[in-house]
Image (cartoon, rainbow, N blue to C red):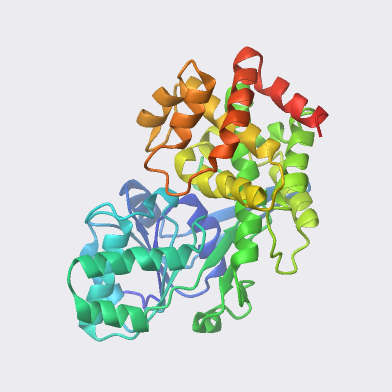
Length: 413
């Protein structure tokens, strides 16, 4: 008799196993969306594994047993459908990365989710919560729009109405540093946070440490900009300067003050509604967490999918500063470093690399910046008033180095 599954999770990566699977005490069926090997390996070890939380002061090991089934979509679609049609299911959670949040055909995440909801509707099962755990602004609500778009395009008005009324999409913010797995155990940091907008699902999380709040936006902006934006900036500096781990980059004598200034003089002021969060204290905590020397989080891993990440992590903050009439020379420098990375790195893991790299390699810095940043596929455009400053920074990097550029920026503030 199969386990009664309360949570279905899409995206069976290391992050899910070190985050949602730690918080959730009910039974989870976790679904790998791209390759079967992860699900098969986890199944072979009885779906049990250890999470090692480690920092300079020591480590703790936790046995995780909440995942009861590891499945692969579409191979195991029969079992996945059975779970979705069951009244036992309370929520579907997702960690599918930023690039999955688009409607790109029947095999895309929104289309697959629409299909699963159609199965639940056909079974007459009650409504559930769909909770995105990816670094996308208003993540679950954005996903809701994509799913409804798929259903509307299919012409199923009854399903559209049912999903609109019965399926809840509370936004959430997740935070834990989880480097790529290198063994059967997952190594991560002690810090672990999950914040969800108020929703009836809170009854399943009593005593779990998950926070429920009226508005996720301040938490989301603080995380995406002060943490994820810093992470991306460090990754591109590291990739260009040959610094393998971001923990080493953030304590570098030139890079460290640049990152601190980026956070305190630009990222913090870009967030108008703080939600009561002490953003300067939060920023300092982020720097300390990233400097954890035990995690070995590679710049190369963080640097992937920059075309999807930079828009909300850096572009949005720069745009907000422009609207406030505040300069953003450090955001401009971060974007120049990313464009230089696109032009010079031979191993770029990004769905738009084949378009971006040739544009970034233009010998004319202003043309390189303009052509790269006005790519049609970008859904969140950077204000063009920054282009000239970014081009000047790119010229500095090409003529000397990234470290020279950020040294100049520190000296100029």
